[in-house]
Length: 229
Image 1: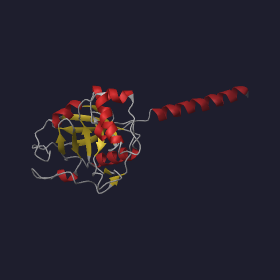
Image 2: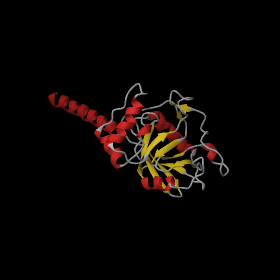
Image 3: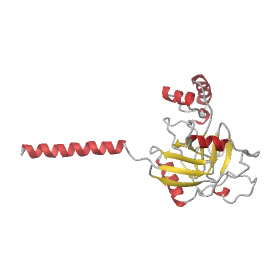
Image 4: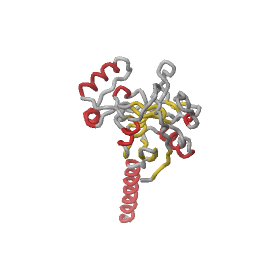
């Protein structure tokens, strides 16, 4: 009888530990963005489930296939996801399209606008005070490197307008110093993933020649798919 009780306890404990490990190691979805400049592999954060699930849904539907990186700003970011860009004529203004809905923000101080951060585009505060995300448009940060002093200077100015100030960790300061990014955007746009392969492709796209609206003069089309590795 005692041996049976011990066995049951071991089974319960083992099952509990296995379940905890599974939760800690919850699988992250990866997406491959393919362009003529090369491939960009991104991982989606589980901590931003609304944005993650919406992005996965659109990728599986083929929503992004044939859309353009329609707004490119060197040392800043590359932006895409406007469905109106699929059939857009040369020089047409882009950036107002979407799937017909917005997504409530999922701000998380863990995730900053470092180089390679995947973030949602949105309308400005004057027409979008809740900072809701566009349902499909996104940007990938290129940015530049910032010292800790520079990050603090930017942050001090922005904190004057925030209800909850941002407090950076030493690791986040190090990321901005060594990798770069755009701290000006932190906690204003939802960061819901990051590039894990293909940072050099972002640099190539960001260097493309653009018109006065920052649209590349030569269309940069993309396709997307969910990948396992």
